Length: 249
Length: 298
Image 1 (tube, one colour):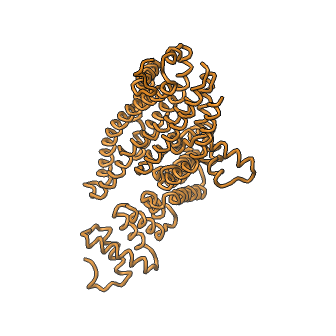
Image 2: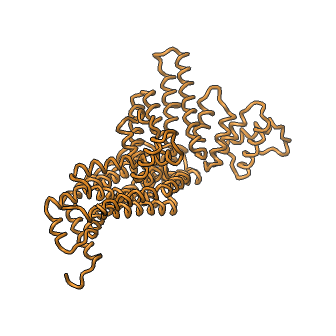
Image 3: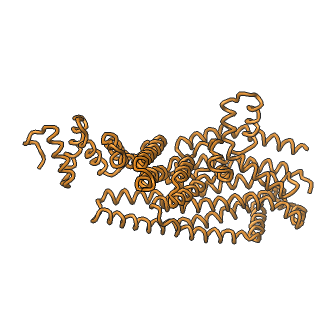
């Protein structure tokens, strides 16, 4: 009996002593993005009872992969609401993996939007409305992703592409901003040039034109003579009234 | 009793450890490992339509999921079987009738299970590393070929560097081995906890179910603990959170696998913190298990 009491005391003492250590370790691991905060109980409805139990069992990453595969199957069946729902769960389970956000946004802003746009069984106006709504959904997903991963060049690049190529009318200002952020966060040098191309197309924005011209001039200085770059540079020289002697050839 | 008798003998513990390993291997654990290996190799051919990063992540997710399944099932079920099986086979009486301290017996059981789990994880880690390395090579080749085709010529060096970095981030890294270590540490905690439960349990089923409950609650312990530190609204809620936080180990502290499969690097300090917590739980639970087992009527 004495030993049993001792066992209980040791067990409780261990339990009390471990609490601050656990708290400190959890805080340290979370600050280094090694651990996720526990899933909210409301997530149970989204991932289902089994999925929730699996995430509780430490299989969060595997469950995310499974919902991703299910989302991919739904994409093959062009079931867009299911694609959105399943990719939503995937990104909720692993919000720090930018590929998931990028794929989720891509499916909505490109696949779903185009599918609706070319679906001739619907009236034209409605098709266009669905196209716009799905492109906007893609933008919302990427913005949500950037809330978790503000330094992801992949997400900034994708958002830049959406503003530059998918939204109507094109948003050159935001497209340029995101391209530049992509470059500043480790993206390819071409991203910086894309930012300049976007800003070069703005109307009445001398500050942006100057910024764009500086970027293109630097690329020119590094030996880049691509026709696209040269066209935008000449257009900016005209807009900024650069004296002929200072213009690039 | 001879004068050369030692109350604590590493060689005696080692003999008990090896007998536990043999006992576990007779439970056909190697077949389980073989099935997992086949799935790992199969998974490396799957998902060819996905992009490079996603293909590699899927492979890691499947492999780590299987490694976890292997480690935790053995940790709970096999450990829960050990003591009752020794009683049933009357091996326990033969061992304890000799001058073998009960602590040595418990440590032999603990180390035996840990060697089997650790050995299995090392084998799976070697297999995953090999498969991942080969797949990484193929995926990189495909990505660069795609880049070549897309740009219609030799891609600029910075594009090649970025694509290579993307694939390498999701490929074989040192952090993956830290992920395996985390699985082993969590399994160690489960083994010691299940041994502790076995010492008071009257049946194998009770041990398995109770361990499983601790396993599930252990992943939600963070919620109880944070509620306890923040302070609850009602005193009984506060008390319940405190009791649960005290009684359950925080198993989610070992869940760095999620970050590792995302391609993040693990800091040495984080790995050390995790190891320290794992040793604390295992050591603490073994002390409690010993105190319960030393007086247990067999």
